Length: 427
Image (cartoon, rainbow, N blue to C red):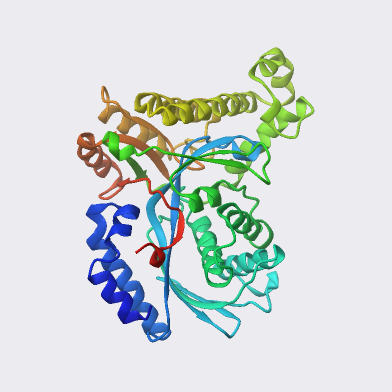
């Protein structure tokens, strides 16, 4: 559609059904304005007379499986109603131009995808394009304007959503949608690993692109199994709340790196590369020697991994049985294990800053006696916590968090059934 056709369709309510599905009924007006602004900005930068497409890729929230994927573990995650949207038009000049709101234009020549030619976001774009080429898919030029409300540095995977967005655009514009969700996720991981030099796993890209709640098993890390689960939290009257504590993420590289490193040291004691095939009984039977050759914290983190893997199965089974109480209990146990055994709620290099600990304490005290659950969210050490609270308990939770961390620190999200999609195909 041309800009005027898109604008008319949005204003006349033709997108309202998909907006309701992606964002919730109460968000229809806000999303209309957001999409209209995106179309308007595209027209200002490029040309409003061109044919346009509209895409969306969600952020994600990990529900259980904290720091397990790097040791071939199991994870439960969900696509959320915060997303990147893009208005896009094909071009025949072999150039990809992406202007994201608040950022400078990124320009990539698809005929020159050399890693050393690009920086930052352009490097991710080049990496995704290169990944499509290496897997035998077609690529082409396009112009895009994007805007995102996926919080940065929040554990909601804004970078993975961006990679999945570039892959989704190339897939729809030049490959008739032939690449499935796993292919797009793998290409996004390739871009981070090979172009951005970030040794990430597949968790973030998979959770952003698939949609809904997914159980992911990384027993084969190159080809993880993904099971989509039918579970609507809102139908039980629950909200997925993220509390942003405003913590400082700088200088946490060593903290993040220490977790897989220590887990793999315990695995190496048993002649394994990762902990996947090590049992709790193995650890307890060899605890004395393990403590001497690794560390007490490494042993605790290994215990977290083993019990968290079992917990993901437990929560998955509760979800499949539509057992909300079992779900909440499992999430609570995951949070307790992360705090006590994984120990990723604050950094020992700066014990004065414990925003996550404080947020968890405030959540627990505010919701004491209520059917709820809370846990550290994402990689930990700083940033955000996750709270599952009933509709009637959200106002008290928001008030308490606002008083401690500032107005708007607590945001209620919903799980959406689609991860990455061409929105214009859904009307």
